[in-house]
Length: 199
Image (cartoon, rainbow, N blue to C red; front, side, top):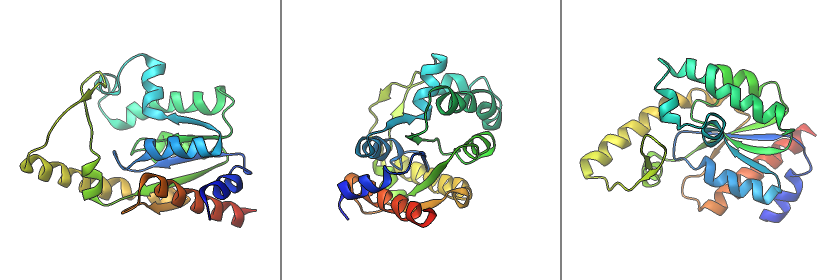
């Protein structure tokens, strides 16, 4: 199936599409392209949180002792604003790695949606790793072999930890070895298959 055919079929269903996965797996990149193909709005929750509160994620998180309290007092406030105050019934939303935990999950369950967990290999994710300063400005950093080893272990830990929540997603899509465009098409095909089964 072509990308255009997939987009036409998926766009017949009015609902929100949530993308989750570990950091740097490609949620924002694939999400923007997917939203463009479907002619709908794209939201990156982390970016929307920063816009809403006028501060970087890191500065906001530094005020909270746990990720749990941050999600309840900051993250879910913005997610609810997107879903219920912006007339947002047909969009693609990139969630943080914790997107299927506690407050976020409870809010997602209140809307008609398809949740897609995106996976890739640790090595591929490492190649896409990006760094930001405390104000969310990109930092150019060239990793040594020792640093690559450290971050690879960190990525594997995140995959294990957050991967436990993926069973709460409607779809699990592996994009290992695919180009960005092909990754989006695979996600579209998975969504289309599910909507056809629901219909």
